[in-house]
Length: 320
Ligand code: AVJ
Image (tube, rainbow, N blue to C red; front, side, top):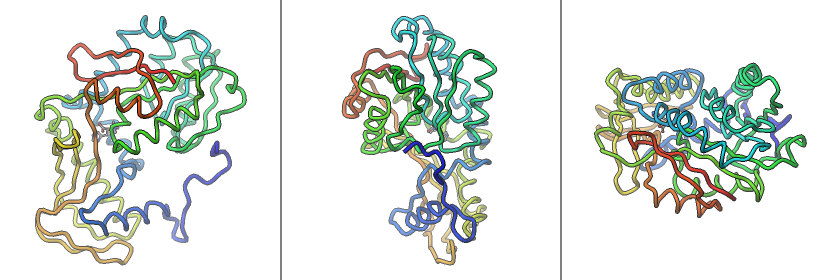
């Protein structure tokens, strides 16, 4: 399924994303309540995330960019020329040119569920790398994707920066790694960013910054539910919470009711007790062994691992 010509987003009779309505209603009906993190990224949410990446507390983006900059010669040595670079969830990445400039690729294939993001990312890249064939593919990368014919015969390098894998519970992460392997083929390499376990205070600050940008990012989900699904969530009675879950080694984001609340979504009534939360995101953190276990379970053998100078973030190279 290349996604080409298919409706990746299905709208219902009210022009609302069908999956959004279904998943919000299902998630609010569960105990504990949860809404999948993917819905944080509407236009406003994507802009707020861009602002997060520039916050002093949010070290992830800077640390990963440092690794990409400092280890260019390693990448050039370990990743031979002529590979097609397939980026999963290309978004509006500034990291891609750093990699492409190092390794002399034969083609670049950005994959994203958002056609708008794809086209602007492809246009930016075309200016920076005039001779490089670019083949954008609009697709849901959680499933195996058929790549364009032009790159079929080339060996692939998968690129999955940003610790996006950390948003998934282990079972989902393993499913994704296995479908990446199916997409990329048996001679592929994978370059993947993963955030590391560290002091709880540092982690919690990264997800609850002093300026309140992350709080806005989280509350934007409630705003989106109200706007798109006829919701009545009172934003002034929901509090952003970022807390470390040590059992699962992850930062969780929640929206916590500061008093007992009743509200509606799509005409259905819901109740939150005082202190009860809606769980909105997981951000798993790893150590070397948990990274290797995850990669191996997903069908990838670790080859090399780089950290930034402060040991906060890691980039791993693995082979199929
Ligand atoms: C884009 C998923 C990597 O988990 O660090 C940032 C999202 N959430 N602040 C992350 C996010 C709150 C981010 N990822």
